[in-house]
Length: 127
Image 1 (cartoon, one colour):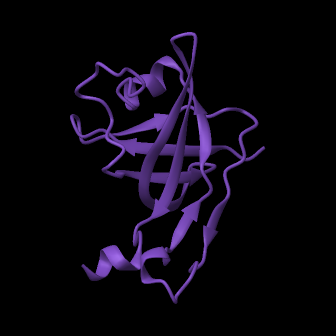
Image 2: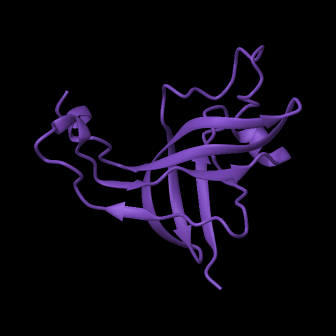
């Protein structure tokens, strides 16, 4: 069985924290350029948005982002440094962007996140 690990940099400790994953979640990383005609949509490695459970560990990593009253939550505007390992071997380095949180009856269920490779978008590189 292949074991995938996703690690996100904690800005307080500057260490990488491992994100807990759903056992059956599929994470697909694409290594290609999307659309060279539109420089704003040209990316290197990227994933489709995928979900991770709202466990105690993940809530700590994402700083309870689902809480409206939380002023120090994880920023959806700033992508966090991250990397992916496959069977403890580094696979890709890049950034994680938090897209949303699913909350039912006031309790978080999961977070939707996207992985973007180190280059990010070509537009960002040229700025």
